[in-house]
Length: 324
Image 1 (cartoon, helix red, strand yellow):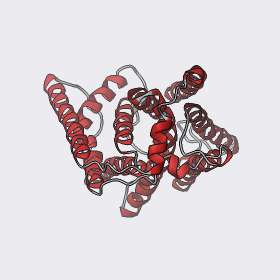
Image 2 (image 1 turned 90 degrees about the vertical axis):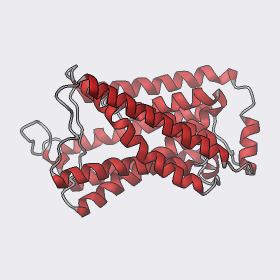
Image 3 (image 1 turned 30 degrees about the horizontal axis):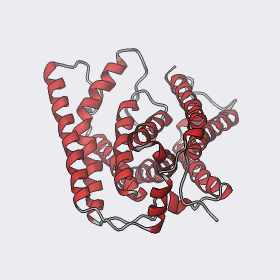
Image 4 (image 1 turned 90 degrees about the horizontal axis):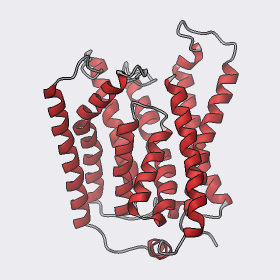
């Protein structure tokens, strides 16, 4: 009989594999590119080709999808039920998630810009663009698919569907914070750390409250799509205001903090409204999962935490290498 829930050890194992598989892909790609023409900045020219970038993103997404299905198959887990993709929720939550995804970008953007600016002062190489062109509508649609849709589906399957759900037995906030930390470290980007961590907290809380993974996918996609749309409009109009500022004044800080408070208020309001309309009917799988979550797991917690820490170390080392 298949399991209908994930355990903390599943979270740890999946996280390590979710880090190692893309690293293995990067090593293989680098070996294949050895000896190919190099640009003036030392980068292999093939790494800048649009078709190659698209292939790499598709392969990376395919690895995560493969990990999801292979792991569930080998561990005899009913993955689509355990991850929450089948969980039903009120239709109004879809609209709330779209608003949440857009609002988080616009209201938190000023404070994230300041944080990124401060990070750049340390001498760390900061990148605020994407690796795909945004010269026309076709470029935009391609980027929307590869940077908007694929990460929203594959990353949510792994980080909220498997890792977060496996950590729920440790309690609400440990599961939210640890999965958010795993999520932001996975990106291997210092400049994205703050925002992806905060986004991970929001997505984890959403998963805890609704149990519906596809709602997390909607927020994730809407968030990515909003950023891409803003970048596309800027590229078409020649507006460079989205780049890092040269100086930060007191008014900039006050404005950023004010907008960030609005972002927090928006999150609180939306989750309040979600709770007001929450469907109290639970599926059999949810009831079973809730009862299993009350079981004691003290004998395995130490081993699972060590495995998670190993994953964190791998992600941190990869991030440091990326910044050199």
